[in-house]
Length: 175
Image (cartoon, rainbow, N blue to C red):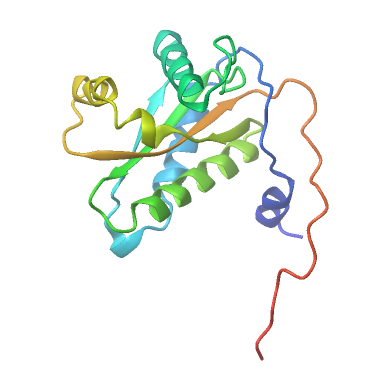
């Protein structure tokens, strides 16, 4: 089996991370992989906000947990120190698909570098709030953006989970 397919089959969502920050060069490679994802009409309508500032990361975690309805002390990012937020141009028709491909590429790239990742939702709800629009403006990001997802990244605490059995009867050949 080739290495790419092996990585696709082995990658799992991680729900317990060590607090150590991955190296910036690794995060840059992960981001580059995300930016190389296929996208509608080649428009490249997605952006990534790389949050490695602990104060902002914790603020986003609290807001995400509140939107999700969890207890106040629950971290929906499972302790991951780096959060790569994928946003897409709000009026672009393939924004969700394009952003989803970016997320997938970043999670696979994380795995290939020995890091864990997990897709965390509720970015859409966060970036509908004025305070999150202000964060984008403070970063010099203009326009209207829709949150697609958070790619939480870090070193895995414990073992990489094993893949569950795959359901049968999910492929239908037409020959």
